[in-house]
Every structure is written in C-alpha cells, then in structure tokens.
Length: 416
Image (cartoon, rainbow, N blue to C red; front, side, top):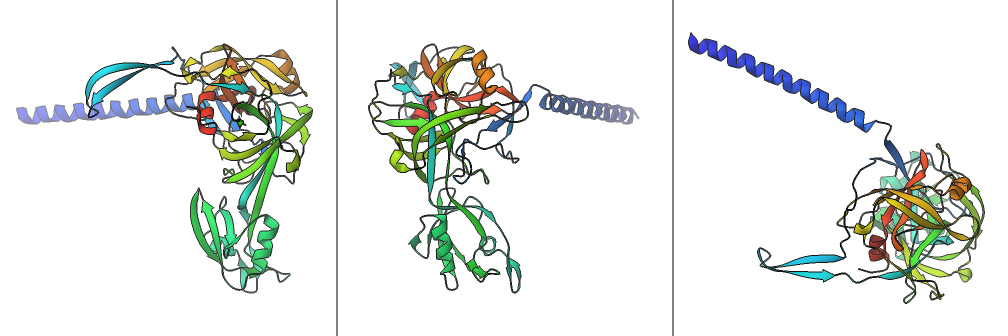
C-alpha cells in the first residue's frame, strides 16, 4: 500500500515537471520570436554595383529579387585591444608547451583610393542566366534543363571549340548536327554536359538557355600598392544581376568614371551614382584579374602617382566612434565623416566586420547615405585604413556594413 502511494506521488510530480518544462519552452520560443522580429532587426542589401553592359552604364535600380538580403541584429561586440603584438606558444608534438615567443606584425602600407571607376568584366565563356521552353513538333521542351544545366553554369567550349561571347556561342549551337558536348564550370569545378539542340519555330537549332558574356557598372577603387600596382576595389564580388551568382572566372578592366548626378536613397529604395565611363579597353587604367567575395583585384597601369601611403590597421584596432570614408559623389574625391557603431571580433576573413552610420551633413544631403557605386569606399580611423564599405541597410540607407581592410588586402593584394 505504501509503495502504491509513493509511486502515485512520483507520477504526479513527473507530470507537473513535464508541464513546467512545456510552459518554459513555449515562453522561451515566444521570447526568441519577439527578439527576431523586433524593430532593431535590419535588412542588409548587397549592392549590385555592376550590371549588364546592355543596360545603363551605372548601377541599376534594385531588382525585386533580394536573394542576398539577410537579417542581422545590432550587437554590442567591441574591440578591446589591438593585436599588433602576438604571443606564439612553441610546443612539442603540438601538445607539451615549451616556451612563449612574442612577435610584432610588420606594418603594411597602401595608398587609399576613393575614386569612382568604371568596371568592365568579361566572362571566360558564357554564363547561363535563365532558361526557356522551345515549341518543338512533339511539345514544349528545354534541352538545356533536360541535360542538367543550371543557372550560373559557365560554358567555356562547344565540342572542343572555345566560346568567346554570347553571339558566337549561339552560332556554335546552330551549327551542331545532333548532340553537342558542352565544357562547363559549376562553382569552379569542371563539368561536361551533352545536350541536343531542337529547332524553334524559325527552324533555328537552340538549347533553350539565356546566356551573358559580360557585365559593367560603376564602383569605387578601395586601395592599391604603389610598388606593385596591385589594387583592390568594390569590397564585394561582382555577381550576375539575374542569378546573383559570382561571375567567375572573369577578366576585365577599369576605366575612369565621371559622376553626373546622384539619385538619393530613401527608406524603400537604395540610391545610385549616375555617371558614364568608357567600355573601350584602349581607355583602361587597370587590368582586372580576380573577382572574389571580397571584391575585385588586378593591376593598375602607372600606379605610383605620388599618393600618400596609409598603414593598413589590423581589424583588432577597430573601435566604436568617429571615422571617415573617402568617396566620389560629385566629381571630386572627398573625406566624409561617419561613426562606427558596431565592430565584430573575427579570427578569419569574413565579408562583414563593422557597421557604420553616415554622419556627414553634406553627404547625407547629397546621397541620403550609402548609395550604389559607393561600394569600395575606404574607411579610415585614427589615421589608418581600417575597412571598406560593402553593404547598405535597405530600410536605413544612412547605415551600412564594412569589411576589414586587412582581409581584403590578404585576399586581393597578397599582403599578410
């Protein structure tokens, strides 16, 4: 009898405990949901600074597709010290510590940019940006999709013949008799695809894929090494405006750009720099050799122009407070005041490191904040190059993200 009573009490206590756990879990989930949708959460937009060469020679109005938008929350993370002095522990077999050695990192200097430039990229082949169905005698078909091709795939050859541009690619497909072998790259990996073109209503053989062979737009030169001519620009990779895929491999060039006017940003749409630049490679001021998530890089022609050198500060030196950005929004490169409102501690390269807010009244009057074309503007704090503008908050254009200049220099200039 006593055992039965004790057993009943234990069962009742267990049920009460389970009920308490369920209520606590529901309250915790509700609190997390409330935090996630709170007004302090902002939407971040990766600025599409480079666009199709067939459109205007500037960054376009924003696409309705925000694949690169993401949700972030303002953080109180802050750098507390600068790690120019590093302690390295020497150990036996990686396990038994023997002694600690202090090392001092070597100062790296570059010339800060801020000039608006025209960017012209050409794909090494053609990139698939979309598909369409073709009305064949036996029904609507899309040979490209049936063969397994995807948006973003780069086609470099047809039956072993190198693809140079979209027009030549279309002619190669038209001349195919039966199947054709496409040499492709998907996310940097080689791929071979066999596809059989079908004839459209006009009798022209097609595979049902829309392709693009280049893109162009306005961006900002971030910094360069006057000794080698190596440069870094944009602060983010050039992606296709339709697929949002990184255009790689790609080569191209920079030309001088003239800003004619500014379309101000507001809470519903990002602004843009309206200008013009040459698409002729004979007018190039630099060769573009790399297109990465951290920006574009290559070699300037005649880089040693007497510009003052600026030290690249380690990311650990960043702190909340006043800073300046160099940008060209009215025909002249100027320094504008900003405020660093967030810094993140990073032990490896990341594309977002600091959040800034434009405080300069003149820049706010001209642009409303950060606009398309300003991506790549260098950020200086305490007299050193600390970061580069990369993203803007779509619903709060006075705020945006910067990546640390040290990561960009490592990725694009090989400075480590």
